[in-house]
Length: 336
Image 1 (cartoon, rainbow, N blue to C red):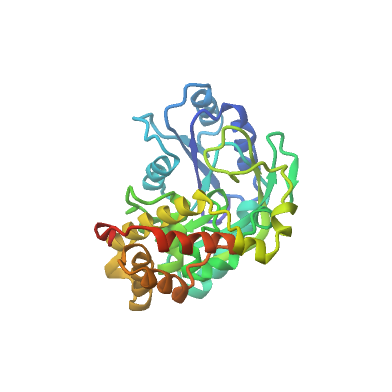
Image 2 (spheres, rainbow, N blue to C red):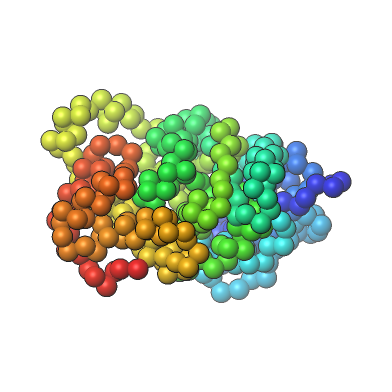
């Protein structure tokens, strides 16, 4: 292992026996020379726990399984327990059903090193990457997850847009110790662990983008989180709709409203937890975002939405949100 800093991979499992061995083998086969795995199962009823124990016995210096405890009921809370138990200076989140490319950790760590050389180890730092989108047999369906999902990773640097639409996929990220310590205060209202740490890094630290694909992102019928669509579907019909059609028939999608409300809940939690740590301009931004939901004046809600550019990707999503903000009945009790 030489003098390489340890990278700790946090593996959260739940009924993942079907794909788990492929994932673990891909981690143990990384070309980075100092990796250890910390795993925790959240109450599986299949053979997941037995598989974890087998690896723990085979690789006692590299693979540790946390003791069983009450089920948390969510990947976010399972990861939070793992985060609290992590001891390395660098950690990666790991899902149970993907496969990592052999240079995933080394590529990400190189990007992390560049960030740390510039900003120092006391600044919260995060690096994330693109992914190959695959089916359940690991056949590549789309070479770039970002391209398939119309994700612009640069949105990580545009806070208003990051607040409404996440660009970070948890299984690609690496955190330094400073960001990990900050994330241990993650409240229950945080939507998911990866989205929360991306907000922390963007508002209070620094972020690096590794533009290569480092993970085979497996989609199957048991994904906890995925693309939310048929990955073999044809997107041409959506893209060929004219601007006039999108404005005239915006197809108000409940999913946009649901995602908006999720972001609002997270923003309230973020403000409660970190109000005193945010610089004035970023504090004003979060308060402006909440004002889109809490102002009793329709025009104020919409004007604030446009002023700060809390924009989704795509015309129809933004039209849907403007209509939603116009029609909604604000609840003053939601203010942060």
